[in-house]
Structure formats: structure tokens, C-alpha cells
Amino acid sequence: MPLQKFSNELSCAEEISLGFLRGREGTVFLKNVQQRHALDYADAWGFFDTSGLCLRVSLLSEAPEALFLQYFQGHSLRSLLSSEGEANMLFYLRYATQREDPLFRIFEYRKSRKPHTFVIIFVRTPFVVAGKQVVAFFIQEIRSSEGILSLEEEHEAFRRNEVIRDMERHRKLTPWAEKELLFLGLSPETLHVTCLVERGKNPSDTPEQNPLWPQKLSRCLLREQRYFCWNGSGRMGVLLPQRKDFPPCKKTERDQGFLLLKLCEELFPGEDFIIGLAGKPRPLKHFCTSLEEAVRACQGYLFGRKERVIHFNDIGYGKLLDPHTPVWEAFLHETLEPLLPENEKNTMLLNSLEALLEYATIPEAAEALHVHPNTLSYRKRQIETLLKVELQNLHTKTNLLLAIKALRLRSMGEEDSAAERSPSNVRLPNRVDRVE
View 1 (spheres, one colour):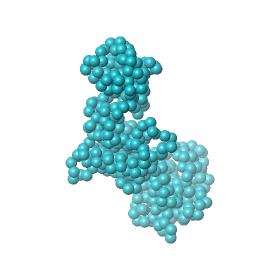
View 2: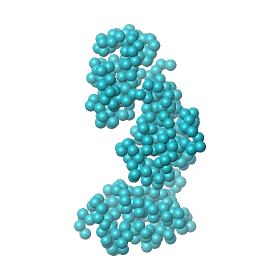
View 3: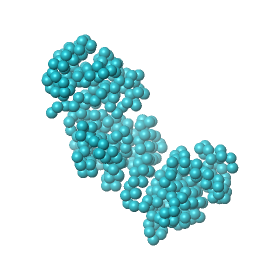
View 4: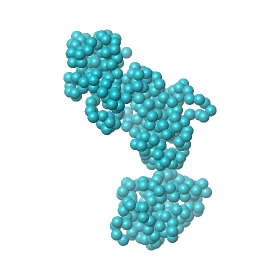
């Protein structure tokens, strides 16, 4: 059969025979799908039709634990799974025929003396047998309780992260994302507080600290709290569900944040974490707004917040800054233009200006910068000359502080969006650490 039959274009269904699926052509198709989706871990592969009949199964593993899979061929799901498992599997089989990408699920097989837990991956095909759509499947046996968590993290987390990316990309809850959320056990109508967990960036951080902390924390939250969580950009996101019989309350939301912080401290002793909470509970159709607020809350230390659990409504003027809008872009350049070209001298002066604005006296600011007060006084005169301002003026200091914080926000975890939405890409170096 021509190789184009195995193209990704699966819109045209083709009636084929069982011999086709069980022969070389079926094997070539499965190998191509396995390679295309990097499904290297499969213990077995084969085909189901949408009625739940296993048309083919081939073992890829010699592990004794996987031998039970050979009994799938020629059997229907009714004889393989519980009634509930059969209903779920049939639902996923039919749903897989509508998807462009693989569908991952975890199932239990309890018909033998020893129960088995396995991951099954469904992939749609262009084939029809006896009038029924054919779905390819790949199976991996899970051989330990810890393995269940590892594979759940690998596969189910893939689904959660994909839903989050879809909502961020479209900036709304698409029909596909809504359907996926329901499959993952999350109602789009439930009110949630979007929360971000970020590891502290203090000087004591060392390479020895666990770089996979988001994965470990998400597994714990899934197992014990049943929270929806996802990983990305060095942070971990969590949706904190709110009770319907209680009105939204900032204290309740903050208490949930403190419980999450306590869990982080128990799992990772000696490490520092920041919890950022969105402004209020919202349904998932407003997810992007909540996520942006949680990100800004994590950056609350820029606006004088020293707590480890920071609520968006507590960061004051930090709620108003939006360095990606044309108005703020113009304000930023009008206020700091002479210091914006990126070079070593301007970097030094921007750091010095920030310290001068944040500390009450020059000696305090100089101590934070680790320079002599006379050196900072000289830099102050340079800044005033370049910007043509006097730093004693309250309104001038306010404008400069807002401009610097806006520049900070544009350079902190928002480089990609800044590059897309702003013509310049000015980056401000690490801010001055406060001296307590």
C-alpha cells in the first residue's frame, strides 16, 4: 500500500480488512505513529474499534508483568474491564477519533488474579473495519505505586499543561479546553483562586537544591488534595477551589495560600517559597486575568511586600502597572529615555536610581549597593543631569519609581510577551536587595 496512506491527513476514512491491521501494513502504521509522538515506552500496541473490540495487540516488552496484554486481542472491553471502566474506555475511544493528538488515560485491569494498572494512549486512524472507526492504542504497565505517580506526572500533567497553554494562547476557554477540563474532573463553572508557587531567588540557592520541586509538589497535591496544578516557567500553578456556601473572602484565600506554603516547607526543608494569589475567585473563562494577577502578586516584593504569601489586592500601585500597553510604553521612554540604551554605565545608573528612590537616605542606599556614599552622590548628580530632573521633587521621584518598576516587570518572566508586544527589548538587571 502506498506510504501516503499513513499520512497525518486522517480526514478521509478508508474501509480495510483485519488482515491489513494485523499484517505488515498495520505494523508500519503503528511504528510511524509511535515515532511521530515519541511513544517509546509502550509495552504493547494495537487497534480497537469504537465498539470496544480489540482487533490486534502485539507485545513490545518481554517483561512478565506485561504478558496479560496478549489476551486483549479478539476480546471486547466488556470482558477486560469493569462496567465502569468499559463505559469510560468507550467514551475515550470515541473522543479519540475527534482529536489531532494522543489521548492519555490510566486504567486498571482486574480480571486476573493480580490486578494491573496501566497507561493507555489512544491515537485516531483513517481506518474503518466493518463500518466501525479504528483507534490505535499504546499501553504501558505501571509496575509500582511510585511508578503510577511518575507516569501520571508524565501523561496527565501533559494534558493539564496543554489545557493551560490553550487558554493562554486563545485568552479564553475554548470548547476543546472545556471538554478536556471535564475529562480531568474540573468544572469550568467552579470558582477558583489562581495561585502560583515560586521558589525564592535568594543568594543561598544552590545547584544541590531540588530542581524538580514542581513535579514533586504537583504529585503531592494531586494525591492528597486533588488540586488541579500545572508546571511552567520555573513556577507551579494551582487552582484553589472555593466553597459555594461561602462568599469570596481575602482571608480565606490567604489561609489557603499559607497551607500551601506550609506544605512546601514540609516537602523541601530549608528552601524559600513565594505564593502569589489572584485578586478574587473566578470561573475558568476568566483564567488569563487571574493568571496575570497571580504573576504580579509573585512580584510583590518589587512594591515593598515582604510576606511570603502575597495577595494581588495588597500590592498597591503594582496592580496598575502594565508596561506592555502603548500608554505605559510611552511613559517609560519619556521618563527614562537617556538611561535606556543597554550598556554597562546605564545599567549601573539605573540600579543606583532605584536604590535612591527606595531608601530614605544616601548612606542607606549606598549600603544596599555596596558602594561608598560619595560614589552614590556622584552618580546621583549624573542621573539628574542626564534626566534633567531634581530627585528632591516628590512628583519627579514618583514618576521615576513607576517607570523603573514598569521596566522591571517587563524584564521579569515576561520577556516573550514583551518581545511580541513592544518594539524595544530593554532589560533591567537584578534589583537591589534591601538591607534590613
